[in-house]
Length: 61
Image 1 (cartoon, rainbow, N blue to C red):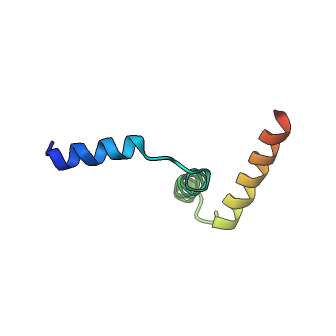
Image 2: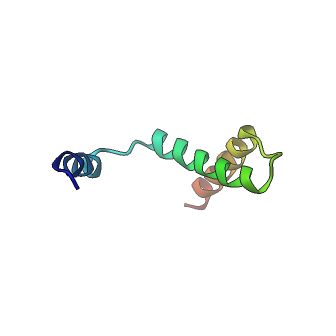
């Protein structure tokens, strides 16, 4: 591993991970995996499902 790569990895470890980015990555991961299984899955379906799951989690606390 080069010293530049090691430096970038360390910088990434210490970088804040905002909720907006976490949400975008979660949705992207879900979409990509669901799309492989079912070509009729849309981005809108993923967003709707994520919003429902997040709402349920908020009410469960």
